[in-house]
Figure (cartoon, rainbow, N blue to C red):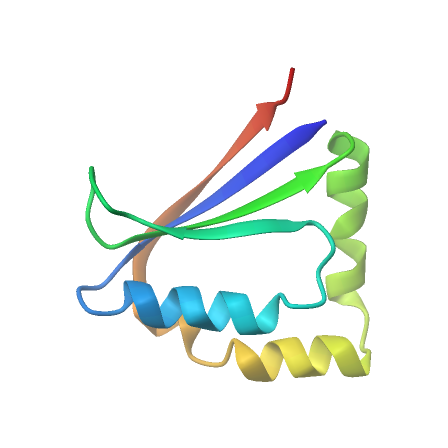
Length: 97
């Protein structure tokens, strides 16, 4: 089992807005575990936590985002403008033991 943390460092005042966008856009995503915002440590961070059986399942999950389906159109609409809310980001992939 692997867990993926997509980390976004937001512009001041945008972390909760971005977290809300992710929460709304990912409601039908079975791999979503949590959307996190900072309470200590670095400020203005949003972390989207997803979980997969293995790296192959993670890689395969990206295929659905390439499809031109109604669900993807809905997700794109919900995520409109999210690029303007953050400064930088990173991804961390962990093995769960």
